[in-house]
Image 1 (cartoon, rainbow, N blue to C red):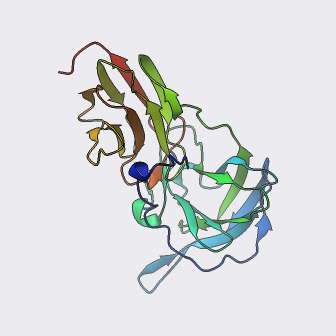
Image 2: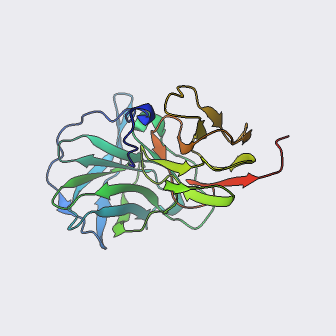
Length: 265
């Protein structure tokens, strides 16, 4: 996640990233390659559904962003999968149960049961890998039938917007692609009106800070999406709870900011 380095911008910690049991050593899922997971069916018992589970170890050779995906070849769009990424200490890093967003804990991502009528991009999540560290991917099958799933772990380049650059006119398109991430823009020289455009599953807000002592920034969201930008000096875009993320796609984690002279309605 991006760090601002100023006390007035320490926006909290991740929600719900609790400790789990240390993952058992499983098969490896190499970065830049794939693995085939033969998942047993879920079992009903005691009023609960126990998923069929397999665990894979991901050991990045270098620092960088990694996207993990699981695509069902047996159940297709009727698959009921959940991906849980843990670090070597057993701390949950991300949980994915939908095809276009993921979260910091399963409580924030209830199990998706409705098929999505689209080309299947798989269940996905992103994380920032560190060379020499081990991560564990727990693949859970909640369907009452076995499933054959292809797992991918691929490096990717995150959307570069929101690293503190000046924003004084025109349009910016960024994306919230990691749990706990926030994008930032220098708007000290901006005038006019700021608009936020976003349609997706995240609870995105754009916060306008007037200065280092501003404890109550002005907030824009997809409903209240316009405000005068001046006299703000810093613009921050994030998931409201710093606990959800998506992908650099329309209808997922991608958002648009626009500065113009057209006044708000």
